Length: 335
Image 1 (tube, rainbow, N blue to C red):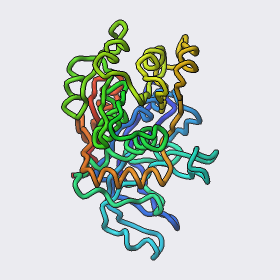
Image 2 (image 1 turned 180 degrees about the vertical axis):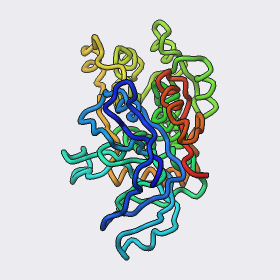
Image 3 (image 1 turned 90 degrees about the vertical axis):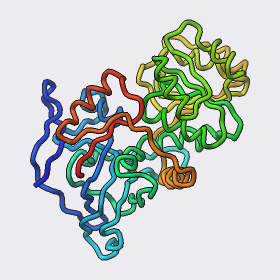
Image 4 (image 1 turned 135 degrees about the vertical axis):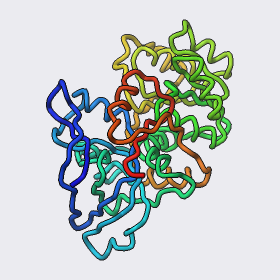
């Protein structure tokens, strides 16, 4: 038996910590003894019923660092006892350009990491970066691969360019900031408080503006000289301000839309300034492998907002609801 956080169809109590049977690996799978996990915005939206094809009585959690403690075939025996992270996406498909129709993400479509044990495909395993502890390694996978694809595979970031990271404080945005700075870009942020601007600058940002300020795009252009690449996960009415901050020929990569659709968009600005708008979702296995290599080469450490035991995981959901975090909300499953 094991403890696991179960998604229920009771709107008054959507998440419940239960004792359930520990999983047994099938051929091609291994079992992890989970050391640590981390919360993503996706987990919060699923718990609120704001996600497609919700599967109840499933275990949430896409991020994990664990020890392989059981395998189903001799071919995977070399993984036994190793500390690993997993690529949370599966069935990406044949094209590097986009995910296929069978693509899924661990942590609902498949039972996830908010449990003492979980299953993973052996092909999704990667040795946890040695310079990261269990908590830091667990905070890396989903947000890390999303940030890497948006910034490099889609955004084609070049050294010396100016980059705007919107909503600094969230997990993906924090990785975009760190990755861009490590690559030699000048990084600027938008965020909701002066304190978070200070945190961002301590992580490598050159400056930042408050997204609720009037005409913040003009302030940003003044301090940056204009933005070459903007990466955004919020959408909403702030998109027009982001476009105003871009230099001619600039790029905007969107990896989410937490604020929904914009009420209006200056399409004249898009064509006249020859702007490029791209979408990005998670990342391919190639993106994930490249992200792990990038993190190891630059010795990047995820920013951790706070750490809680599995028994207090609902406190992490509440902190995410209020947008109070700066960095990743981590869960310690096993000491």
